[in-house]
Image (cartoon, rainbow, N blue to C red):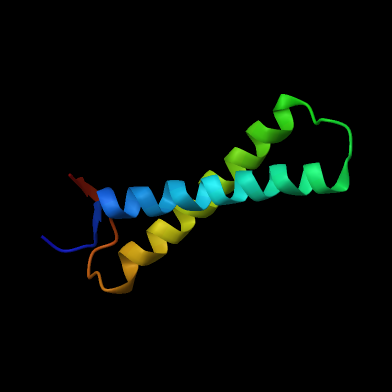
Length: 74
């Protein structure tokens, strides 16, 4: 089968990136001592991070692939 295998390692990497962005956002808020932000802010940050992760995963899947698709294998 052609295409990059989107495996558990890629999933962990993607969630690691998301967690890193959320943690740095939280740390920045603590550092700047601004008032606690509403939960929608963090939902929005999670959405941005998720989209970024999907874009990166899609890019990685197309680097050495003759077919443009991602399939899961665990």
